[in-house]
Image (cartoon, rainbow, N blue to C red; front, side, top):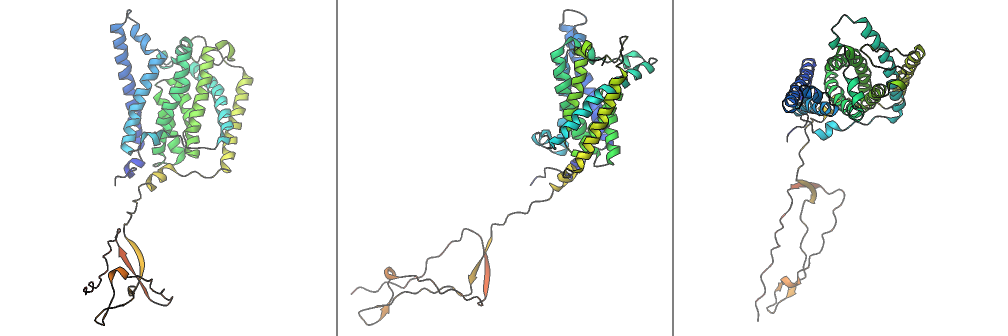
Length: 371
């Protein structure tokens, strides 16, 4: 019988393997993007057709799904996990949703403020390493940008960084170190100094949620809420209280009262989540569950033990008088009467038989001669 969860896969990936998986995603994204840009340039009507094509949110979403999907498929093959089971969101208590909502909303405002200060303090860096390209893409393509940042990005990134990378890292390191390590990789994944700090902070929060609940559900909800705030600030900049853009010449800071309120909201959400988890039943460790699934299943035996008496029940039939004065028992008049029940103190032995039993017909005396 083939094992579904080998021990080598239950603890995949370790720290080095996690780095290789992230590098693999970046390489695939670059290779696919370069191929699409080259094809757009060759087939397009203008020299910039290829660049415009790779900045289309629908194309970016497709490339993201292909690159991360290929890495996830490789990881599922290593751990020999069926995609249906891997993609199933582990249940978590819905009373945590208010805490997740408050934390995500507050982080969207706080990280906007920190990112703008970080951008102003790092103007000595090359600006291409600081430019946030997602803002003009969302502003130019509102519907495609919403699908990209609110649906595709949370799903693909949460399954990769929390569902696979962090799950494996928790089997090798303490929770705090595993969460920090996965958060750093999450920031590096964005390949942008400005978004690195945002990814680092979000990775710490989403990783903490996963470590406590062992479910990707909280991260999926929180990630979608955070990105929805970013999408709204990019598409409706006049109604977002100066939330963005994060880079460029038009950097507008939010009012101080909004930042302080957001900090209080984040603190309330974190406290709510932590206190609520104290009253919830402990969730099993997914790694321990995977290894427990490796236990061999005992084979079912087809043999059954039935009690039988020491002596078989007698065959009792009435005797018939023959013409010559002898007695015989004709087969047609044979009557089987049940044997008397065994007493409690009578010894009983068991006999293992393999079903189905084949019963031999009883031996009968020969028919009497006809006169």
